[in-house]
Image (tube, rainbow, N blue to C red; front, side):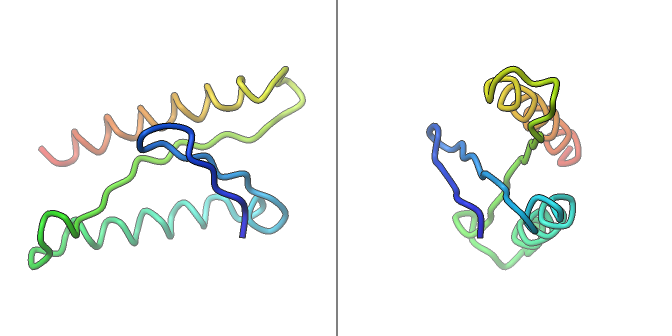
Length: 89
């Protein structure tokens, strides 16, 4: 139940708090599993197929600003996107 913010065309930021933050790996795995189902379902029309590349980062003591965290998350997202494209080939 963490807040979600749209920061660009198809990019969103979720600020995880409390239990959501503690369960980040599980949340990401669950989300990926749900989107993977739509990509594997052959009966779905193209507009019903959903994919998403998630990159996340946690604010640490070494971070000077939220920009540091967003940059790390952005980097991870593009790495995931690259991996997803390679997996489709």
